[in-house]
Length: 218
Length: 227
Image (tube, rainbow over the protein chains, first blue to last red):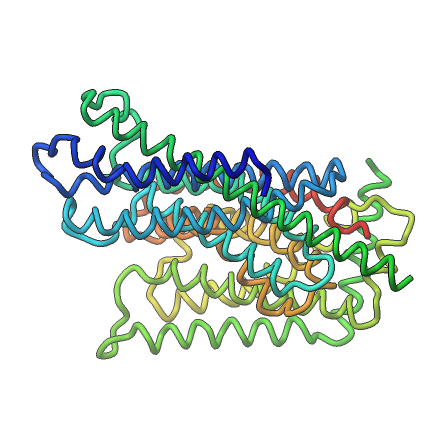
């Protein structure tokens, strides 16, 4: 672990440790009361989920079209984190929806497209795990498709009725809610960067070991 | 451009010749599609009556299932004698080979749909002859979108382990938008009072998917298939 990663990790851990107090200081929402506070975890993880999918797609494109060998390690790391933050999002979302909407799940635009993105990256990981030799290129092709596909799922399901609040809600939040929100976003971003760097490093080292083995054999 | 089309034609002709001699893919895929529809019928028919408005869903699921089966089998055939390697070694444009394989699978799927659509119409009382042109257009646009991704993935998976299970795992989430647009568009056409404006909208969306999926597939086919 490099020194900068260690500092980032310490900072992220500290921010997460302090988060409960900061979230507790935020006022209750008028109609949902205390329940809405899951938002402070739900939204940052949803953002990291989407950003991570983008990172995986871009890294895969670099690997496939520009033959950057290290880009594959970044793509794998980002794909795993997409699934990780996707599961946070898909667990916290229904918990909130149960109290706010009265149902666990609703087939609306944002939920469907998130679920599909999540499934695509699980498929990516299964491919990488069980695809055997050559699955790095196949995975890269798939990640590029996934990145574009989300836009389509988004567009196509947008014509169904939607009850998920739009992103335009964020700037309208009162300051007392805005501060904890941006605090949580920062903490999640730091955590994401740390995990991404660690996982990519591990993957790069694994590739190096494979290379050395091959060199030994020949 | 004519060289491109000539290669496409040669690949398609090769696939047709192989298929006509055995009829293996066509007969098994059609029978598979029929059994899928029957399985759904048994699952959805209550006291002798089908649940309303299920026809488009069953139709598209049957198309997706039999399409996956056909995709897997065509490339399995190419793998057995290592003919895909020969195809890729040929001094031909890779995208042309891709388009040739895609056309072959689309022709096969079109024949399957010719059996499937009347069957679903018959079993679930769907008015398939109300707007046959638009229905055919929706089926064609949907099949192109599905097979554009499917051909690329099946070709990529030829050398992978556990490809049989990986193909549907990768293909179904990826073709969700095609499924949504196909089912909604077909459902609008199969209403007792067809909703043409809605069908038009979903058809336009399907066409957009086709263009983007085809572009992406043509773009990635070459680097992905290079060793």
